[in-house]
Amino acid sequence: MGGGGSSNLSEQIAVIRPVLRLLKCYEIVVIGDREFRSVELAYWLKTKKVYFAFRQKQDTYVRRKGKNYELLSELDLTPGTKFFYVGIDYTKKKGFGKFSLAGYWKIKYRGKLEKSGWYILTNLASFEEAITAYKARSGIEAMFKDCKTGGYNLEGSKASTERLTRLVMLIAMAYVCSVLQGQKLKQSGQQKYINRLKESRRTKQRHSNFWVGLYGINWIPSIEFCLDLVSQLMSITSNKISYFQRGLRAMSLIQLAIF
Image (tube, rainbow, N blue to C red; front, side, top):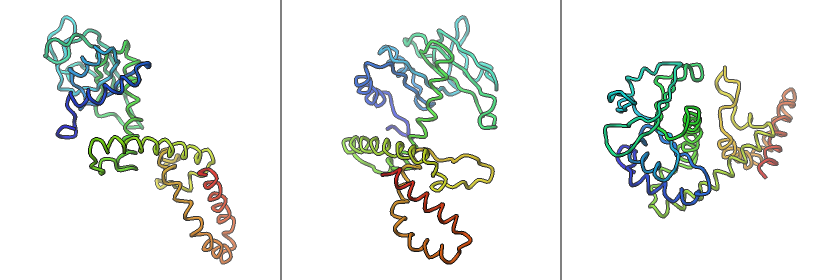
């Protein structure tokens, strides 16, 4: 990785090229945020006949047909509006050909006005395809968090390239197992015991299948540890016995879902 958490073109191509070979029988769309926006990478993907959708910074220059170069911030994208321009020149660099540009500013997201709109550099055929592709990035971001601070702390490993490759493979397998485990736990209806609601106005559990699957397994060793204590509490507070019984049933269902 380069400085500031960004990668350079050669590093990006080195990562993408083997993936393209592996998935050559599939139609691929490469998605990138504002730190992953180089015209060189876009051109390289276009020559490989690979689709892409890269979000751009507002201080990027573009030139539409019959117009002079202008900043993206000057394209009058406002809340509730959208556009799709075909055949634009991206930045003032020469020799990279034409691209398309999708602009989209959603009025509200989760009840709040978005601070800025999306400017998506793409070679996809329509506005709908470009925006749909880029929206998939929200799920990718959640997965990144799961693999880093939200679960496996991948960044803290500081492993060499070879060891990191092996570690990523192990994490990929463990991640799939946790997601499937969490899905089973949610289907059993017992996830409320694993991730209780803390916000008074929230009506849905905030944690993903991955989180529920990863931390739900903590219930298994707690069953043996707490069983005697729960039995004693049940005998002391008989008026709460229905709640204890409900919790014990949840424990058994969680155990069944995991194993």
